[in-house]
Length: 437
Image 1 (tube, rainbow, N blue to C red):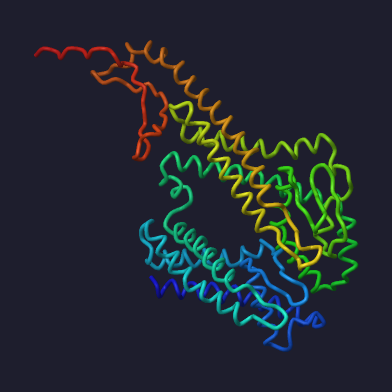
Image 2: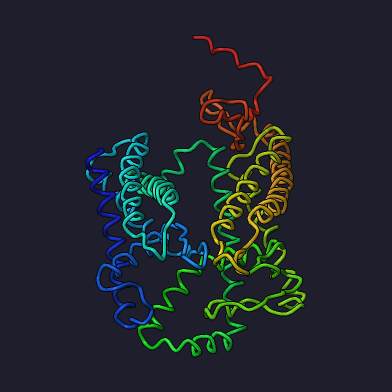
């Protein structure tokens, strides 16, 4: 597995690097005045820097400072290749059981981190220097997660993998996924709506750059690469803290205060003005979306694994919503970063504030909804008990009682795969005497 994992890691890394070398070569041919380097070595170093940017590795530029506002969309390229590498290990027979997934992930992650470190050392120039420790750590983590997902996905489809989890962990995981999917979809719609409202400014920004045909294609690819960043910023906007684009700036639902911004077309969609960017009714829908995500998280938690303990349901709802908030806070951290050491040294959402507000809005809402939904569910089952007892005379056939069809709940004190408590409508009655021969 070690040899196969190393081969898969090197293949995935070389494939991603080859794609970015091709893109860099097109940019160097169509716009040589940019100065990516002298000749082919300069192109290769620039492609290596772009490959490291795809792994979210910060670069320090001489005379400018740290460049940390990196596109999250580029992470999909190495992630997809590493996922395929993990599936290849499974198809080749190196992963046969679910407990071997971690072995495959480590077999891919260790050589991949070494390759990332080698690219960071080889791409260093007197002008730009990537962070070596970030290259090793982030390369290892991306390969570990993506390779592990690929190996697990090669064993079974997602539905079957989710079925391997016990009811309680499955309810938490699916609740987090559902709430994150809702806020992501809402953030994408909000980002697209803001860009549509400022379409004229977007066209003016493109015309001012005069990129040409090839440059327009590369500019479009850059905009798509930063699309996940804009979605995360829109989520921070919905939560309330908003984001900044430079020291002393703010973009929030209450209004915006922006200074001079770079001539990047995607930035034309930033709302400007001291007033709210949307009408009151639309602003209400924007701000209520995180609470709707909390409602969905609470319902999913109780729907998959209800509990007989009334005080436990709000706790599990709070856990689900809090995990969703923590994920949003981490994404907010990676969606921003500095653009040098000057006024643009602080760009993006305040990750700590966004995470805390997300936990309060989504987590508390999920806890309240989970508690109420679990109480209603138990109350519904209790009401069905008299009906089950009334049919006692009609459910005996051959001395065997027929199940009353009452649902099951999860015992929180069970250490196995979820002990299920079934309501017996014949409890307390003495069995019929055995028939005489």
